[in-house]
Amino acid sequence: MTPKYLQSTIDRIKAIKDGIVANAVRWVGQPIDDTEAAASETKLKNRATSLETAKDQVHQQEVGAHTDVDDEALVADQLEKLAIGIHANDPAKLADYDIELPKTPTNVPPPEKAVIDSIKDDVDGEGFQLNFHSKNATGYQIKRAVTEAGVQTADPAAYVFLETTGRQEYVDDAVEKGKRYHYMVRGTNARGKGEWSAAVSGVQ
Image 1 (tube, rainbow, N blue to C red):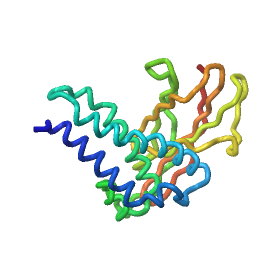
Image 2 (cartoon, rainbow, N blue to C red):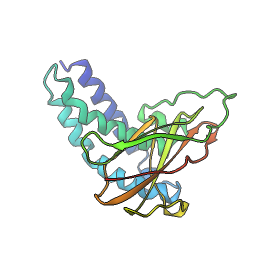
Image 3 (tube, rainbow, N blue to C red):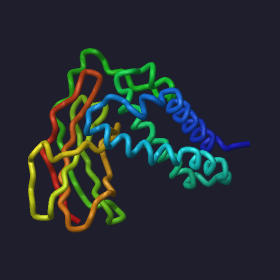
Image 4 (tube, rainbow, N blue to C red):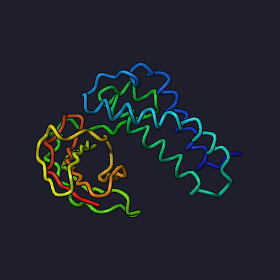
């Protein structure tokens, strides 16, 4: 018998896979913002390729080895975030992935301007961890610009969309030594999108 903690991950990955199959056309050519499309398409190829492997790996885990499913759960988390980003305004489509967004009361206003509380080196020394918040937000969008180490930028055109997340933190591991990375965040909810935060930056 498959342990509950393994079965829940298996079921979750299967539901996401079924959703991708059901909405394959939307995943390949979904009409979202140009900056978001480039990032989402790249992430989709990486995550979808590893989906079957992740599912097989989950089946092979030993009873009691909870930590062994961390990677598979992370894959499921990332695919779920992409699904939410692509179908954010279509609850019926999200049901294909067995995803139900929390209901936002109609009297809740759009998110306020986001604030990035901190930027620090990730625990492994590769990349940055951002922590942020926005009142009334149920999700967050992150964008990034890259310059030489000593160069600052506030030019919106220099920023590229990275990801949509439901968490108040984000880890960016795709960084190079000697470059300066600039980040902005904004909150989202059923009523709309908030204002982009002030930029923060760091160099590794």
